[in-house]
Length: 190
Image 1: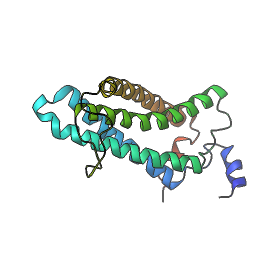
Image 2: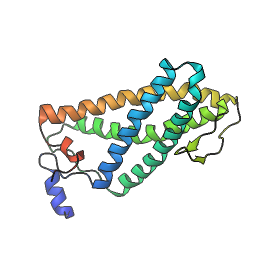
Image 3: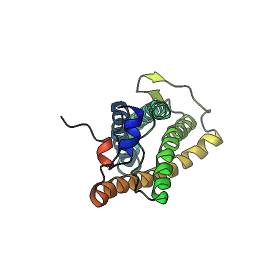
Image 4: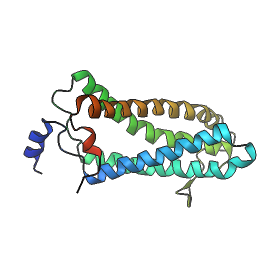
C-alpha cells in the first residue's frame, strides 16, 4: 500500500492495519506478559518459600526476554509508523492513546531492568532466555538494588493498570464505536 493510499485509508474507519511484524511482536509481548504476571502472582501469593527458586529463575529469564523483545518492538515502531487513529477520535482520546502506548514502551523496557537490579541485589543470576548468563548489575545486598526490589512491583502494578486501560480502549473501539481499530492489530483473515 502506498503512503498516499495509507493516508487516505487512515482517515476512514480503522485505517490501515499494523504490519505483520508489529502484530507478531504485540501478541508475543502480550503472551509473555500473561505468563510473567502469572508467575509473579504465584511467587508473591501461593508458593512456599522452599518452592520459589526455580520459578523465580523462570521469572528472571522471562523478564530478560521481555526486555529484548520490547527493544526489538521499539526499534520496529520507530522505523514503521503506527496507523493513524480514526479521524473522528477526540483530541483527548488521541493523546491518551499515544501516551498509553509510549508508557508501555518505556515501562516494559524499564521494568525488566529494575527486576535485574533487584535480582542482582538478591544474589540471583539472571539468564537471558534461561540460557545466557547476564552480568550482575550490583553486588549482593546493594542498597540501590534493594530499593529496586521495592520499586519493581510498584511499576509492575502501574503497568498492569495501563494494560487494563489499553484493553478498555480496545473494547471501546470494538463494541461502542465499531470503527475497526481493534481489527488493525488482529491477524488477517483468509
